[in-house]
Amino acid sequence: MNLDPKLMEIIRCPDDHGLLEPVGEELVCQSCGLAYPVRDDIPVLLVDEARKPA
Image 1 (cartoon, rainbow, N blue to C red):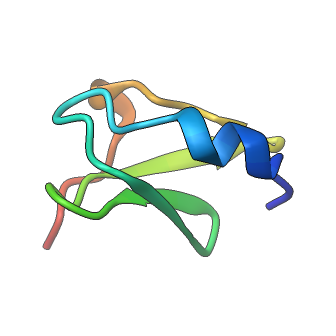
Image 2 (cartoon, rainbow, N blue to C red):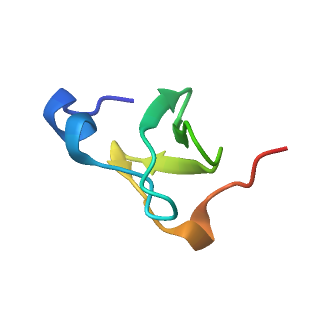
C-alpha cells in the first residue's frame, strides 16, 4: 500500500472520526476498530465496505 503521508494526516474514520492507521492492506480506526479496505492505493472510506472488529 502506497498512500501519501499528507493524505494520512487529514483522513479520518467516517463513522466516529478516529485516527486511521495502515495495517496490511487496510486502514484501521484506532477508536472503533473498523477496517477500511485500500484498493489500488485508494482508501475506500465507506462504512458499508468496512470490516467489523472481531
